[in-house]
Length: 501
Ligand code: GLU
Image (cartoon, rainbow, N blue to C red; front, side, top):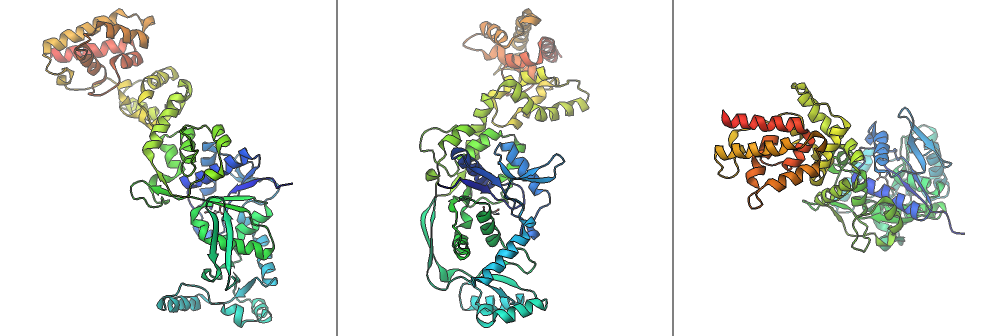
């Protein structure tokens, strides 16, 4: 019987979740869904110096936002505390130190690793000498060659600091199969005798994840391409323990569109939280990142999470770097915005419009943002939106009377008299529509019916400016519908007064 597929996302809590990390989580999630396997979240916090205190919480929140949830591992409790669920725990590496220590010593006993007492000063000197001789920096196996096990144990017993290093064979090659890149081979003599257990008793990433992936029964590892050069070390360790290694799938790098360089955490807007704040929808972000490195090999571009889970195929993962094209994301996000129902979309837009309406209230305005009003604004604006935050652009027109120069009321070279005639005509048309017939379609039909088809601007321009005070805005019937009959009439009156003064 073949093994149950088990995959994991294993981030280090060294900062916020990066878009590349979200992609790794997504592929794990899709894989587990497709092959009815388990997907668990493990936290790799063995590099204690780089830990950011609230990173685990933020990371889980970002995954929750994207709807890419695991079925085992680390979660947030009611009070925001870190909790764990699953039978292979603990899932936070710093809670497993005794396990790593046991296995590191076991490798020493097996003759596959050794104690090393070299001081940082000796290692610095060694590096300087190698650099001068134009050699790649590597540990010279001094403690393996010169020190007996008995002496090493005596030095440990006397309290001397030590690390444990893996004894990489000096000859031969290490070969493995990568699910994305096929057969990969590394020459062993180019690999350093890397540290597996540090002098403070913490394991390095190399040891910790190998032990964990074995004990937690991981069958496939999705991770970033940057780990590819370390993979032979990991394979050698699995073999030294006598364990079967999981399969690896190294995902392509994500490139900055302008520099064509690898996107780093320093590329400000690459954190999931930034995408969230800017008003991208999780469905759009997930769809977008799914295609960063996975090619469905069809024309289809819009995929729901369940479509993705059906279509996802490791064989269609790309090797070449993927460019992060935010214009494409904007387009996709706009598509998803237009697919949402108005009520849901309105609630997603509420925080952005609250900022505008409350700023205007502070200046003395009195518009309270009711759900009904909010839904009207969203109905009118959503065609033009790419991001949720776009709803706020120019939205003050829905909350306060516009101020503008009277020249703006003129369409092309209209004279004041013509502007007045136009506004009077609008007033009449609008005035004839009763409150209960104040519907978007009705307003549009009436206004279009009355305008000169060859020169609609004569009627629509002055009216639109009267309602919005802007050179560019939604159409006059849209704005009039949102702000209501009374307010529309008031604004037209105000424009007439402005011309007359
Ligand atoms: N902790 C590693 C990182 O955050 C994960 C690498 C892996 O998945 O094995 O990059």
